[in-house]
Image (tube, rainbow, N blue to C red; front, side, top):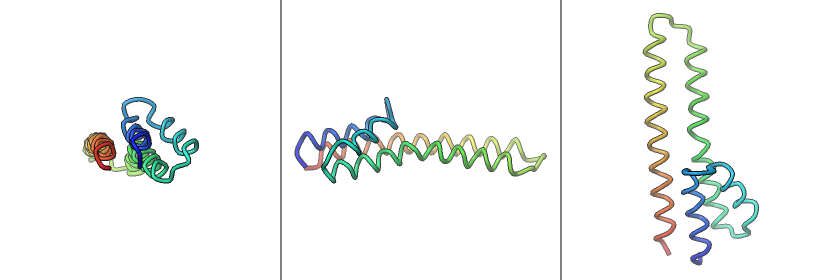
Length: 103
């Protein structure tokens, strides 16, 4: 990968700060290089994961009708969701830096 492709691939991961869905999709469909498309697809999926997990957490909370433990389930779901968001955010930053540094 040349330097322009690396910067574009890294920007897909760094787009977690702004336009997390739009930028990787545009890069995926506009750029003809397979390496950049690979990173754009991975970045897009990693940007989608928190919303998928939020959907699963809401589903678990609303489907489970356990009255005594519903507060604990909601709290646990919120904590897991927050932790996963933090991990994915850090992972995107690390992957973006790795793409920039690797030749």
